Length: 133
Image 1 (cartoon, rainbow, N blue to C red):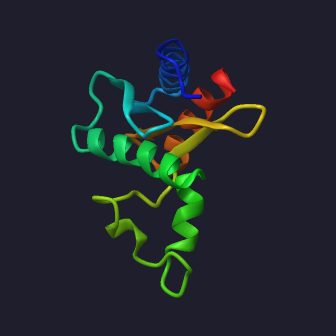
Image 2: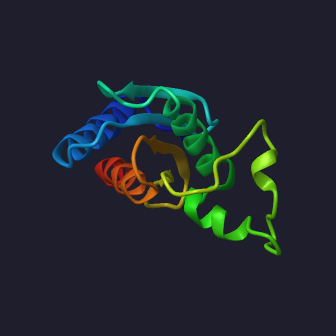
């Protein structure tokens, strides 16, 4: 099982709606179960530097099947995943990436958002996840 293009579009639209309602300019990436990009949007005026971050947040959330902020807690000095951000061609270990998991516990993909504070990035990613969960 993996996210479909229709599900990815629904998630993307939910993220855009949440961003627009909060007057945020975001980059939003949706990946499938294989961590392959299915859908992406760069809202007008969103930072160019956040394009890659959004995609890496989505891939990181899928690679480890947990929110990127949770990985960040484990990757601090002395943590069990210290320095993990240097693996897999570069990971993002701060909030804004969330896995998409169906009711049976199967990971279908993930959403990554970047362009504001990590709290806002996570809030927008969650809106997309909730739209298709």
